[in-house]
Length: 224
Image 1 (tube, helix red, strand yellow):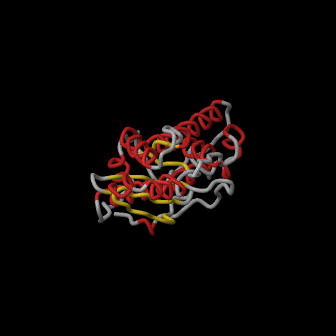
Image 2: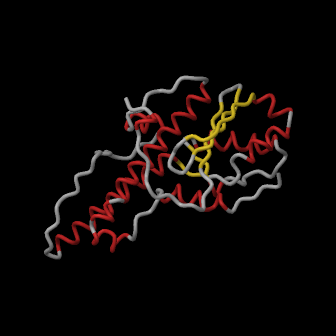
């Protein structure tokens, strides 16, 4: 199994974005983790749900930790429920987060899609008569993964210890960091093969859905 500390991270990341947030809940607690854009945890809060429901100021303080961050979602309906309750506790309008959330499995799908695009570019170059060698990807990523558990196994990560909410949050963080790494590996092909860069543009720092969510989050301002 791979640990978080053994994963490398991409070298080039956007300077305009604040980062990412991960929210998970169990029947008793809400866990909020701040994560840098390369998937490194930078801050964490675990709060009893009863306290949030009774003290709007606590909910507001937690929202200040996530309002300008892309929000990583591993369970769309579950995340909606968690964010809706947190927003209600803070006495704010519902739904503000929807433009800045991204599905973790979808971000992995962006990696797979980019590799398919690279393959199409190479096929077109070969059809033109130019000889090109195959890309020896360091990892065979297989096909789409529909759940965070599948992604955890694909990334060869163990199950973190802790409360259910904390363990789930740490799992999502580990997967995010792995996705950032395999995306960077994929994009670096553009630096080694000029015809790929010409066809697909310069290397991008984040998978498309993750980047779009971060761009939207950078413009979010809540009345806190």
